[in-house]
Image 1 (cartoon, helix red, strand yellow):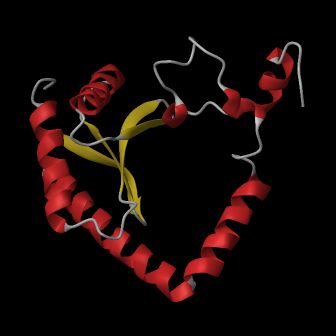
Image 2: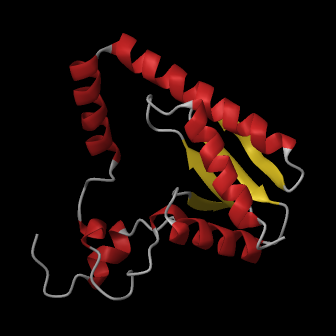
Length: 160
């Protein structure tokens, strides 16, 4: 569709969770608000293609490896008194935060991502800002998990 002024259409299709925010948001038009790519039907089509191409057994193996690595990271974070797990680890996702204010956790997220050795995606729930480590690759090793933890711990020392 072509719009002379897309402001109204964007207000209907606006998808703006914390994990999709970026520093260039106000500088240019963000066309993702005008497409169907984040819609349920489109996502299900992408899943269908993946299942057809890879097969169920391959996907199951991939998910088990990711969950194993995420569980390993969750256990490491749980043993560190500076951090807390905000929700139980699920599949490849670990949600955690520094035992500090939301502002400190926001600064920590920015510092980690500016460092560029690893990338964490933040989120908020019930007024709490937290970091999310997502294991998305079945080739992620135990060394990668320890590397990520060491980077987080190193950078977090500036904020505690």
